[in-house]
Amino acid sequence: MTNYFKKDYEKGLWSIEILTLIYMLYTFILIGIYWKGLADPMGMVVTRLLMVGAMGVMYALYRWYPCRALRILRVCPPLLGLIAWYPETYDFCSQLPYLDHVFAGIDQTLFGCQPALVFHKVVNSAFWSEAFCMGYYAYYYMMGATLIFYLLCRYPEANKAGFIFLGSFFLFYVIFEFLPVAGPQFYFKAVGEETADTGVFPAVGYYFQTHTEMLTFDVKGVFGQLVLGAQEIGERPTAAFPSSHVGMSTVTMLLAWKAHNKWLFWVMMPLYLFLCCGTVYIMAHYLIDSICGFFVAIVFFGLTSWLYEKLCGRNHEAPTR
Image (cartoon, rainbow, N blue to C red; front, top):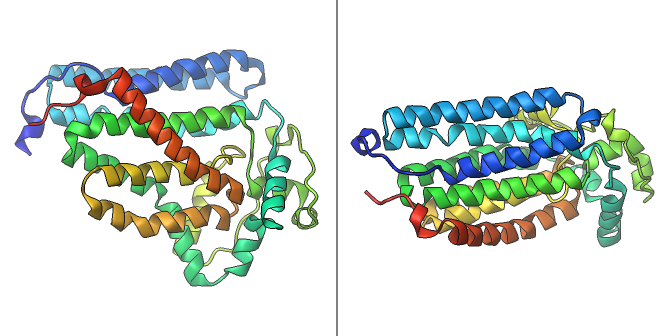
């Protein structure tokens, strides 16, 4: 533990700090393009200024007393920023006509029904409801546990792990900003479950610019209540395809496997499986969203790993001490 507070200056920014600055610049340009259509563009600009300020304060503290503990704390603003950037994907994608009718149609063609409507009705016991909701709710805890493990136990590889993690997250966000898919809980609320059951999927255009009502699943227990409460607070008609819940939890599992400590991977495996099922069970995603989320995650993991080696390489690995 003394190593964490021993003065030891390490040059350069964390990779996640660099990625956050790049993403903020990119979305700042989007704000300018969509300015007139956004509900609060100035607030979005202020959010970015606050993020730059928070990152600057943490960096100044580190320069004042350069030690590993303060360097690790510098990851907090970029990671917390993910909470702010998610609802903005709705602000951006809602400027375009929604494509839910396409993805509902794909599910109908592939599976002969709407799995998001059927799954929670067929598997409706309290045990499975709680299991799927527990997995879904564990999403952030799984990611947090893996990142903390790298920072505390695999510090030399933490910079690369952070690049892969945040880079993959931002790639998902970029897709969401240009591929407006609300998800079944919003779409089926808009068109009606009866219409969806007949296999008719009308286009809704810009409907979700002004409507954010959603279907809710039958709550069976504590985790169901937690998921429902989280959705009521922060869910938006955005980010359905591909599923970032499946995608980022898959990236997290790959990072856990690469950490050369398989207990973390196997402890999280049941939660991961429940999470993947839960995305469809609670009607957050079409089944095709979740399937594609898995495969897209593998591509993003490989791409960000390759980019890190090309752009940063071993020169930016933290020294082993």
